[in-house]
Amino acid sequence: MTHDSIEKLPTLNETGKMLHDIIINDGDNSDAGIAMHDVNTIFYLLHPEAITTKAMWIDVQTDGPAIGETVGDIRGAYHDGKTNADVCVDIDSAAFNKWFLEEVTAIK
Image 1 (cartoon, rainbow, N blue to C red):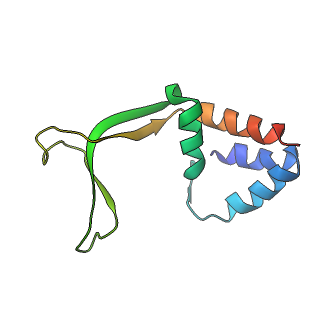
Image 2 (tube, rainbow, N blue to C red; image 1 turned 90 degrees about the horizontal axis):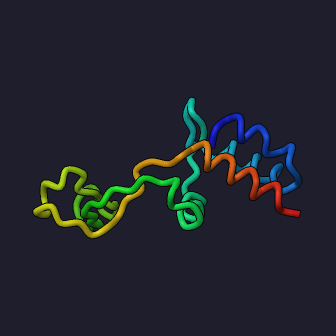
């Protein structure tokens, strides 16, 4: 979510004020904005056209220093080109920001 969208949140309604305070204290931010993880799943289900996916093989590490991590074979080098998941690799951020602000505005 862009910083401009984040700053609009408290002007929308009480829910926007609450979300603003939660989001700005999340800590997963950069100059471009703040990463919105879980809500991207909902956005993808409603607007798959706004998400770019790539087929790849995904493993869950069960031992070693990466235990519990999901690891994608992004080069297709370890599974003979086979894939087992479609991974979201890009998002239309303008569409996401517009959708999110509209959804928050609609909350009464």
